[in-house]
Image (cartoon, rainbow, N blue to C red; front, side, top):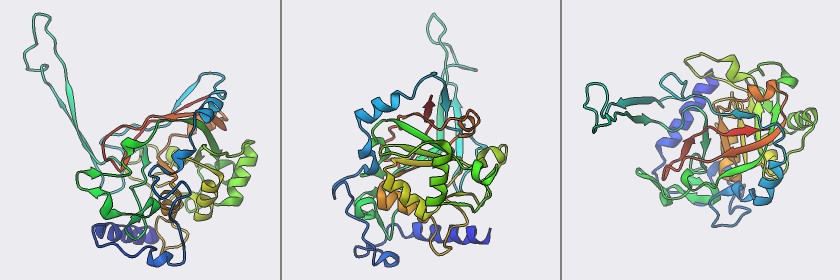
Length: 320
């Protein structure tokens, strides 16, 4: 808990300086590391989404043999545990219902809804504008060049192409027990073992999901667990090198917490988003796939097109 709180403080402090003047290329902590321009070119803004293709979609569609579908998103509402200070509220507007007057001779009535929410609640995709390194984001783009209070002018999740590709589920409970103990890191050795157990190989353009049992174990809780299992930095880079488009899990932050190095909070986020342009899927509902023994499937997601959004509340669908 102490490590988690300290990491949270570090993250808040970093976010509090988002509007500060830009540093010279290369963050102080990464002075010897060159992480941009991207492998997809200096002007690229969609990262690993470049690995999606009609050919990949057509090949993934062959995985559909039964037609059974799985909703990978959880319900988002007032009681959904959220990373503070995120919150959700909804107001139903009775436009012509309740005490209102029906419309016309056919007595038409109806309702509308007004939602006031942080988008990063519940099942979500982190866009490339979510986290960066020393005020630079994917491909070295400076915060001053794309962040406004009215929305992102680059990296907005509304620009993401539809995802229809192969999904791979790695059931980590088979290695570590159910649920996987918090603080357990998945690096190359663990990922290789999980692939071997599942009889799958991660290929270019795949979406990779980890099942840890964490969400199911905390079902009904009003709070997010302060610690969790997940990929470590080596594992994140390994997945990026294998060609993963997105990496997700049934946990709220995807990555292992406590962090592998206390002084490097959310380093997996930085590795995937900033350095490799790989998207992050959080709070994925994976237990139904795991219970059915599903290891690969057709994954589809059309991201809500809210202009300039950093993240998006999502409900991807797995089809087997």
